[in-house]
Image (cartoon, rainbow, N blue to C red; front, side):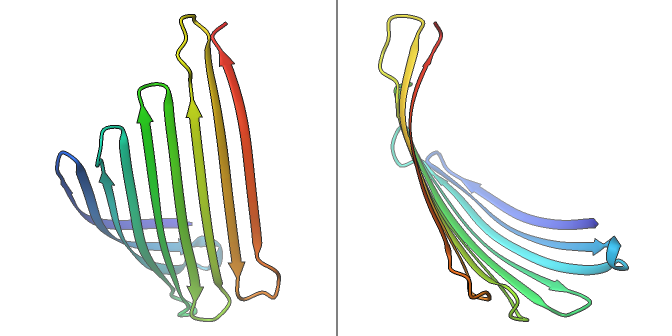
Length: 168
């Protein structure tokens, strides 16, 4: 495959926030399919917010449209995510993240939605020695629905407790 892209972007910022607005035009040639071409547009808005010391919020939203030149099939993808991180010194770290993605084609062969939520909390108690101990709890939830198939949706929940000792 051979790909080309052209992107235009505008970035803006302040002391507690920043953002980026971008549009991208892509072409991809499938060399195994007589050089058939797919053209696409991607529009995205990304932000970074720092409302208080140690906390960062990163929202992202994007829209994508691809069109196959040989079939005329259009595929639209929408996605959004929010990531929140919080750090207090070297002892406390918290991460929360949620993502959504939806993809649908004009020929009806693709209609898929995915959702994911992730959380991580870790704590490292103060220590006078070279040994560092970290206790963390991690969770991940995933859900996928494919409306074009009659198969049940996929759902997954994972939880992990971790004890890490290092430096001895």
